[in-house]
Structures are given as structure tokens and as C-alpha cells.
Image (cartoon, rainbow, N blue to C red; front, side, top):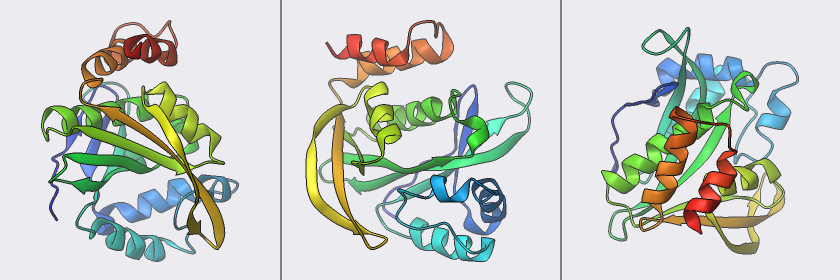
Length: 216
């Protein structure tokens, strides 16, 4: 593995390096509840899985890639500094040390934590680490062009739309047009400050408004 990132702790979540043998049972349980799996895995490269063992095997393959660092997202129960439980996963991927670029992707969460601060803080912690510790010049976000929630999340976090790659991939036997977004190191100080303000100070103004102002 050419990329190693330690556990990162925020106010609402902790990111711990994915351990498929230890984490897969809980991750399978929260992502394969009745009525959940089909929508959750729709735009992911694999899944849903027939059982926890199959998911564990896939996560081993995913984590073993040289340019991937996958995390289990753990949300606090009862406030800061208390017990945490797995609520999803996020990865730093396509890391290219020679160019100092990387991508955040393979992101999913249990329905219970959607529309909370979980995803925003998970992305904030990793963007901050990639820009400020790893010295990345560019961070990328790519998604299926049909995945409207993912496209909205990228813009909300302050990424800038770059374009559409037509017939970019075949995923689960279907054509995928891929929408590309990016964020540069020169943009991060203002964007990061806007995200931190929304997370930890005042969320009365929509984050999309704050990040748009930061990038203007």
C-alpha cells in the first residue's frame, strides 16, 4: 500500500482504516436491511452482496489495491467522546503520489445517518488530511451522471464541475456516463473554512451557499 492514513477523529464521527474481517458483519447488516440494499448499492461498482462473507471478500480486494485507503465511518452515540458504531464507508482512491492528486469515493451510509453531519464531516476530515498533511494539489470526485444525490453532494462540498465523460465505464453490465468534479489546493483554505463553519459554528446558512461564496 502506497498510502497510509491513521484514524481521524471529528466531533461527530471517527474514521478508522477499514478492517474487512472485523467490520464486514456490521457493515453488511446496516447496508442490507429490507428495502435498503437495492437503492444503496445502485451506483456502486459491486453489491448488494448475498451475505456478509461475500461482502468481506470484496472489501479485502478493494482495500488491497495499492492506490486505495478505505475507512469505516463510525458515528458517536450520545455525544462527543463516547462509544461509536459503524454507519458507512468512504475511501481515498486513485492516489497518485508523483502528481499529488487523489479522489474521494466509494462512499455510502446507512439510511439512519443520511441528512446529518456524518458525510460532511467524513469528507472534511479526509480533504483536510489530503490537502494539509499529504500535500495534495488536487482532489477529485466522480460519479455516475444519473446519481443526482452524489452530484449535489460534490457541489455542496465545494467541488467544481469539470465535465461529462460519455460512455466512460460499463458498470454491472450497464453504460455509465461519468460526471467529474475537482477541488484544488488553492481553493481549499476558503472552502475548508466554510465547511468547518457549517459543521462546528453555525449551520443556519446552507453549506452550498457558504462553499459557493468561498469559491467566488
